Image (cartoon, rainbow, N blue to C red; front, side, top):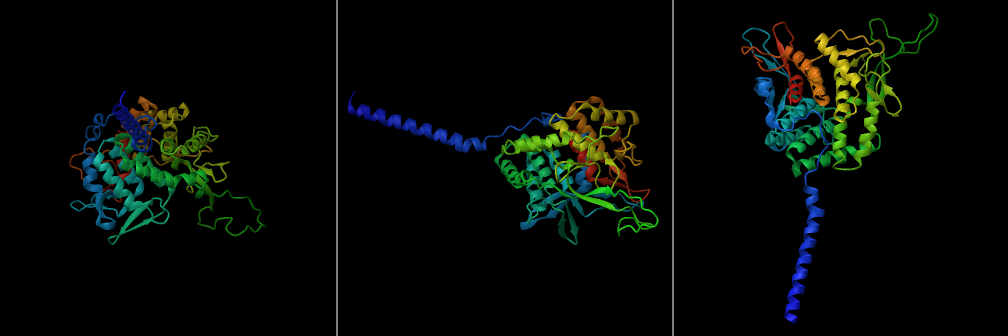
Length: 429
């Protein structure tokens, strides 16, 4: 073999080695980071957005939301975004005009984002994600605000909390599962980096109302300490304790975040066990409302009430169902309640199992429908949908045709709440 041929072979071999090295570098250092991550299966998720048409399942829903609930807000840098007001109320007198609130709840916007993802509306979802993050992210803490209020053209926000950032991340994860994309992956990674230290260090607790204080019996000659007993006409004193609302801990979101950072995996398992073991020692299969900061004790009820709230109960059950950890007792209990009574109370007393005198909201029945989808219980799905339709404005002459309504401030008016309508939008998917 001539020297010239040897040189050609050596150069060719060197080029091949260089190409292989570049391919390996690209694969391990670049392509792997950009490749779409496979998220955990989400029970109840319809695989193809083409199978879902809100106008067939709830005629007029999208149109009435756009007409009555959407408002354009000017954000930083002269950017604009579409947001949902908390409610629209029809005219209180014949011939009058309706009115809408000046309050924008983060929870409503987040559910809307999840609905957009489930409908497969890629561009709308990405615009929503950018606008929400810009409008609701708190500059000081980095978490998202609970609400924005429009006061004389100026937006003021309050109550930033990690749970809202986790809920927003859940919406981003659902969008990523459908659309993929490095931009969504980057937003998810940023949220993960912000939330992870909080969970690792056990700093999720905040000050909660733990219900009315247990009143002690005093003899007539005793002088109780100030504030121990209510004065005539006053309510019972309220107990406060630091804890974490279990309905704030989205288990599927924690599991999905582990695909972006493996450090989430043990935390997801830890909280899955916490929610699974939160069943109260009561006649009905009810869950505790919160976990105390010490991580050893559960708080049966929160919010100054003696009742386990229906919406909270279904959320906890749904989180467990989405990671396939929910036993059949809770589903059977709710299925029987809705199928047989055609209604749900707004809560139950965990000590006596007595139901509340007030009834559940449309958003609660939408959650029950989502739970039925997650556990593939057709009876629960059909029963929840049947009761849900009781509050559907089906008259085409109605000012709120196509939406879900509640009674207004007068006998002649009705309220179209974003909470109900976005819950329906997500549940029907």
